[in-house]
Length: 462
Image (cartoon, rainbow, N blue to C red; front, side):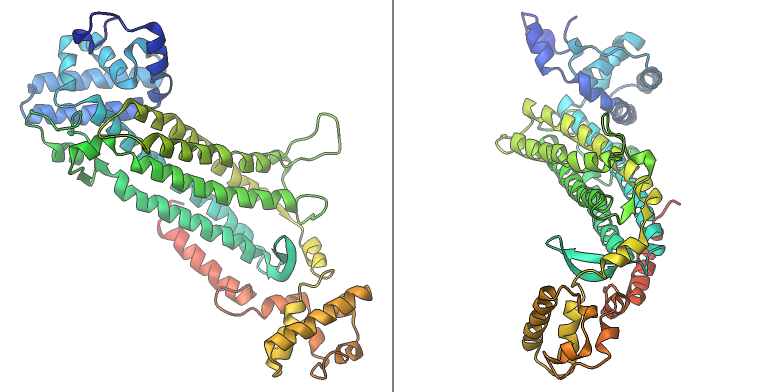
């Protein structure tokens, strides 16, 4: 099969070269975007008189027919035609005859593929934002039901202070809110049109780039043709944004794995999102959460991979840039799957409130409140801290917890202790005492919930 660009060549391309350089096996993902961009391009060509109105109409009809075949699965893609652009152009010529060859007037595959990628990223960014909001809804509903649920808060994976479980869940809500914000901000850089830049220097045809931008709903066009065809910053940015989302997904997944273990027993994951063992019949494994955590590495890898591809490239377009696609396609697929799973996992998760409450009775996570108690009575905090540390050591040596000690034992360490120390050390009161803005006190968590709802429902499609 003759190459559409083969006029200058005297030999056919080596079959190994065709197989190695062809991208159609994966860039057919861009078929709809490629046709969308071509429809706008040919409409502009017709309006500018570069092709006749009749030719433009014929080409548009041909492209629409090809799109229907692709959507039905009736289109055949060939490695001989290398990529999605050449495949569709060959299909178009077969469909409507030689006039199909006029579609490529005033453009190059360089600005064409860049346009396809912008269209793809614009569409997928909106999808990811919607999926993040689904996860936020699930977090919000669980948080509403657990404002007064007491969870041991951790630092260094060691018991730290009693907190509201809702407060813990809302920490992830705000992580995902930042993730959404980053994606929304990236839309400004995605929504710039490269089409019309040609191979690298523009074109001699009297095209109207602004008209194509209008037809495709782009906010602006690239002001520099070299930059237009060689820019993949927006793909790198998307990979970086997705990597951060995966970090947050992975951290939450790790906690669900821990919380659902026999050692913690803070939650139970629904059977629909767990698997069993082929040999141990008692097992209920949080495999989905583990795989959400595990797939983070492949997303990181795609980010580093593209950065490495781009770091040494001279202007303008280079074949190396073909490597931008598989990574972002896989990243989007991975992240979409993860977010689609996480929302129902959270929605169906059973919270074992009594188990969480019992856990904070058997630790020293209320020790800070002893130091605060003494400091409020006038003892410098550093001295109060030292006194509390000695009390904790004393309790450990006597196999007791702080609420197990008698008032007389407290007074051995400071005459400032009174009977009210026991109320101050109750887990509920330890949690309620954190009344500073953004703190874990139920009153502050209720404010946070209201703020979270306001943020979520501002641009919510529910």
